[in-house]
Image (cartoon, rainbow, N blue to C red):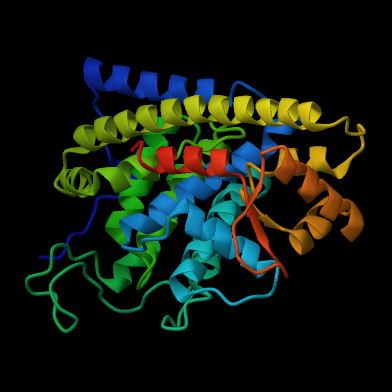
Length: 366
């Protein structure tokens, strides 16, 4: 049965006290996550963005963990090829970053913005031929490839999609709604419209962060809500289906609880990573006196965003000489901060094992 959602402008939202409390708690948890503002923490913002992107991809069946992705990013700096699934996850990170940039720098959200995020997401997929193009045919979820009969969900027909997308963008432009409620409804509505032939889930979860950034709730750090959705995928899908069946409040409560858990997990994790970075500085000082302008300090600051690095990659990111970077890597390895992550001496990969352990623990937190 085809599902045609009501326009968001027509929803008469009535939340009981428990739902209002869940929304308030979630918004406060995101504010707490974003309360610490300091340039030195910017790499941690990228780390959370990557965590969110990996989890969002995992919901769609792409099983690429943080370590595998970090190795792929390092190999890219050496112009080495990486697998197609990893390329898709890296594209998701790019799409998520584009979504946040859209929220920060662009004007009101438009269908063109959503198409641009989708294009970034799908452009590298050799099996997908219409990145950024709103569908002109019927699609569905589940069942088989030939007929929607027996499908788990059948979105609205293609002729209804443009008006529904215009309504969605108009809703996101409003400031009268709670930011958390607005993000929840925008995401669920986008997933219900299913405006693209593929990539809707990842684009729709990027939309969450467009709203939270646009409304000023997630100023720097994204709450990795997809981490919770991925860990409890069936609950997430069930809550979306309840939204489609008219139980909007139940979806909002589910979304709010997931956001609270994600934001609190991220807050604790950022504190752990910042403490780890401080301990690295002490380890380096204990190993030997290092000049204040030494490249090793730059690398320590960058590691949360690049837990696996290469010499050529660090030369580019630090804008320092090959010799200076090589000396810094030797010092960081001797101090126990980095270790070799490849057997070959040429173009060797180096990883921060303590940071990778924290990354793995974060992936299991959902």
